[in-house]
Image 1 (cartoon, rainbow over the protein chains, first blue to last red):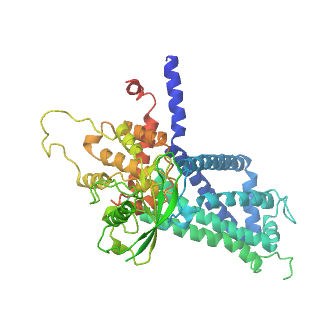
Image 2 (cartoon, rainbow over the protein chains, first blue to last red):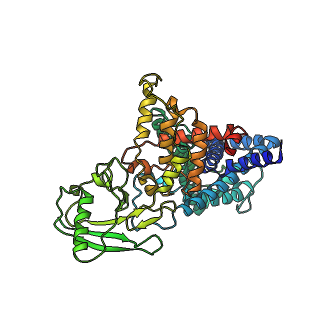
Image 3 (tube, rainbow over the protein chains, first blue to last red):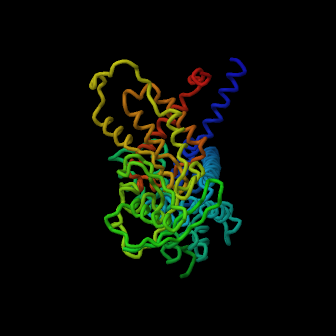
Length: 233
Length: 257
């Protein structure tokens, strides 16, 4: 292979990531990975309604398999980083593409979820950081225990500002998902006259169910449905 | 009917512009929007002022020349029409209308409501063609085309290149335009020879023209006077991703040519 060819193929590789379609495809794939996590996390969390033994055993099971746990964590971290990095680049491209804005602009044809992706994203990120400090590392938690996730959750959500901000954050997450779930198909090139409306309907239903599922946990703690046996309410 | 117009006035590409207010009096509801502007311009000329520049040609919605924002909507409030096909009956007496040119870095304002859309021509030149044999006209049915493909290709080919998709897109993306052009040839048997190269080159040209990226938001589809569907963007994404994945040395020879 001549040096010129090598340089050419390197340029091609660079050009591959230069294209906005490729950047957007990376956002879609990493979004799909994180959607997978959000699904598993919800199913895990809902075990709180099955009692402390069940969810604590589930937590112990996750922590017992270090390879799997750290494999998932590293995958998610890479996905999160790539998702954000590509979005920032696309945001810069978009801003450069319209240096002079409109005096009047009507954007009523697109959904609220689609229009607020750039705003819901950073709020979700801020929430994820707080959430990790709160319930994974325990740094900002009042009574953190390494083994009793059930108690962590109950004590955590008994602080009403935490519970309310959690509900707001999962609301924004589900708004983000409502556009993201269907948008990733379009980005990766799948659009079908019969299936695309079904995917969009499914995205609305899934995001509404996810919101109900996630919000039910702080609500259950605040209303006393989920509580500690040692607590007298 | 009487209307108040707020129009973007800009003397030339390099000059700063601003919104100016005009009164359009005794407008007939049967006039087209461009005819209403013609009347406003007649009065401006009679008063010794510079008339409002706007682009127009066929005035029957097939050339793609006319087009500007009316109250923040590309081609105005009526779906599936260009500005020339929009009639004053779509408005009511006393309405205040804001007329602005398409806004995109790739579409510099030349004067008032007229923008330079040569970027679209350069995108077409980059790959919007097929290789056809010369000589006598081929027999009409010599190449079988599946009905579904022919219908979808025709839907995409309806694009008149007016630029409304770019203007309406919050990202100033040209994805609907380039998607329509890539789909319309890519769906037909005659377009298969250059299918991958076309996707690579046209997408690269879109980027070079500094259009924005697509966020699948759907504002373009809503204002497109030809109702080009978002499906063409998915098809472009598919063709591009496939072609750039396969483009590992194969196009090399072609590039040096």
